[in-house]
Length: 331
Image (tube, rainbow, N blue to C red):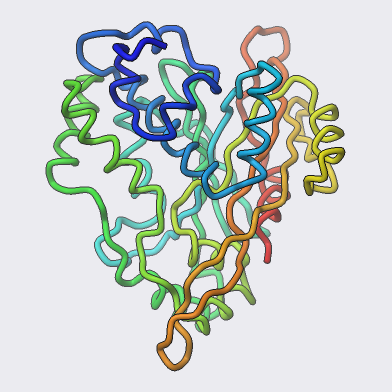
């Protein structure tokens, strides 16, 4: 890719190196001048978020390195993040709204709702209007604290009550302009991109260890949010032969989910590597800061078959698949 393309001018650091490793739409790679389209800015954000995940997930980074050595590019199918559907989290908007306000100006729209009753969560898929198969989808889940015990709800409140919204008034004006015009001047897009990426991080301070234990006893997912926040929970490669990928990962000594999840339609099949552990800081009972190992993010693999009698892929998710995949971050 020429360093004069708009995408190259947007990206920084390790995300720049992913351009050669990720399959990207030709229309985006051809953009060399003019304003930054919403699709190109969306592609840049996805590469920044993927770079962040690979920095935290050694097994995923090793997998992407394997692809590069084999001469294959990663087909970035989707990224996933978790939110808390609760008001009063400092200056951070509640749940889905904190993410939707970013995705919608970038050209995404909510396409399906996936109740996850076993987890007391709701998932939503966001698909890009312009390039639905070529830009990654976002799977955004909301945890519903009101369905848990009073002690759990109080712990959620203590963990999140001082969350900070990273978006400034200027950022919100730029998002509104992007939403209306479908594009931004290059310098405004370059200034906005890191602000958007920061929204996909933990927006609260280190949790109290006691609160973490309360959360973990009732919800592995909320315990994960307590340490990781709105970070990419996982990123996914769309592959042609899922069984071959699983066999290869096992041969390489990587921990793969025991079973492949199959959608009710039979057209979508998924599995994943187990979450890589990370060290995170907690506040102990005496106020001292302590480090503990907890589950981090992980890498996933998916196959998608075409819709019956059509050329387009089945881009749907599946409630049971999602609930099974979420177990990868159980402590």
